[in-house]
Structure formats: C-alpha cells, structure tokens
Image (cartoon, rainbow, N blue to C red):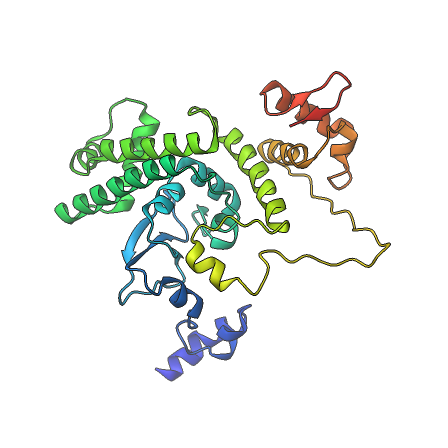
Length: 332
C-alpha cells in the first residue's frame, strides 16, 4: 500500500499548493477543525456539491458525518439560510462568482467567493419566517420523495425541474415526465417560487426582475455591506457563532496610512463580455456618493476612456438601473 501511494499519490501531492498536502502526502485529507467547531452543537447543516450542473442545497445530519473536499458545507441549521441560498438571487450570484471547473465546464461553488461575500436580504422578521416556512416544506417534500422512490436522486429532480422551466408548459419526454410525476417536481417548483417571492420582497425588488439586473443590484448591495463592515457594522448570518469566533479579529483588514500619504488608486480590468461590463460599470456608479461623468467611471478601469464606458452607461440608463442627469453625468 505504501509503495502504491508513493508511486501514484506523492508525485501529485508534491505539486499541491497546500503545504499540509505536500508534507503529509500519504493522508487522504487534512483535518478540518474550523468546520468541526462550526457544526458543533448543530443537529444538521447545509451542504452542496462543489461542482454541479444544477445547483441545489440540502440539510445533512451532523452526527458522525464530516464532508470531504468535493462537498461544500454551510454551518447553519436554520431553514431560513437554506431558503436564501436556494433562491434564484443566490444562484445567479453563485454562477457568476464561482466560475467553472472540470472537463464539463460545470459551475463551481466556493464559500470564499459564493457564500461569504453574498449580501443576504435585510432582516425583516415576517419575510424571514415566510422564507423559513417555504424552505422547511421544500426540505420535507424532497426527503419524502427520495424515501419513497429509491431510484430518484436530487440531481434527477433538479434536472427535471430545469427541463420543465425550459419547456415553459410544453410536453416533457417520457423519462422526465415520469420523474416529474413521481418526484412531485411541480410542488418543488412551487416552493422555490414561494422562496423567490419572499426573498425578492425582502430585498425590495419586483418579483419579475431579470437575472442580470439582480446581479447588478447584488453587487451594489455587496459594496454597501463592505462599507458597513469597515464602519464596524456586521450583519451576521449566525451571530451566536460568528460574533464569538471573530471577536478578536476585524471582519476586514484595514491598512493604516501614514499621515500625509494618499491611498493608491485601484484600477479594475475591463471585462471582455458585455454582461460583466454592465455589472462592473453599475457597481462603480452605485458606490459613488456623487454623480459621475463617463470619464470618471473610465478611471476605475485600466486603460479605458470615456468613449468606452459611455455606451454601457447609456444602456444602464435605458434599463432604469442608473439615472442620466441633464449635465451628462450618471447617478445610482
């Protein structure tokens, strides 16, 4: 066994970026004390696959179970959190933030980019309870379906749900029609719609918001939350654990500049695709405390001129995402 590991595992581990994997190359994985501490006292927590064509989240029991590196854990047993991460808003965010991975170019989910910076809706107790109730019903229904039909999986249910959405009321082929009927996929869809409606209301959005506009608003809200954290106001998802574990260190690192020195301006790379350009430009306008001219927005991007960003600003104004003032400047 040792010889096999030395010949087949060690060469790969020698190239690994993580020091623990290089030094302890014979071990399957390194210990996860942070996860153990986070789920301590919880009877269940939320998981999702790192890579998945159809993104879904579920509860698993915490007793005797610790996920491996291919599964992402969210240390919460609250159906409200399950509901928010199961919403279209979070899915849209995660698809853009997580990137893609593998030969199938499957969407990738990472806590550091998809969950941690995601701006949860403002706290509205009535809406939180609506999300919690719908998520609890969704969780119970899925578990009931899988217990009743041993050949069904969550992946099959959500692949079928995606087919139903694409069909827009059309006819499914026999395979997916069978899964939809036995798996009660229409009811699963209904609970997701309830979650989406409550989440949109919590954000103060219309229910029929386009995905790209959702992303623009989430990026702007993320910037607002970052400013709040710099001012010491942190909106914990799980206050009893997070506030205690992070009490001795700030949520964000702030560099102290010497008196008389100026902060170095940070310029972004200009995105190559139009949707990313729209998000990036809208984010610059949303973060500004005053209206901006196209040349002001262009300064936020490496080597870009006003003529490059002006069409994007006009498009945002046409969609109602920014306001174009009489003097030619733009405001959120």
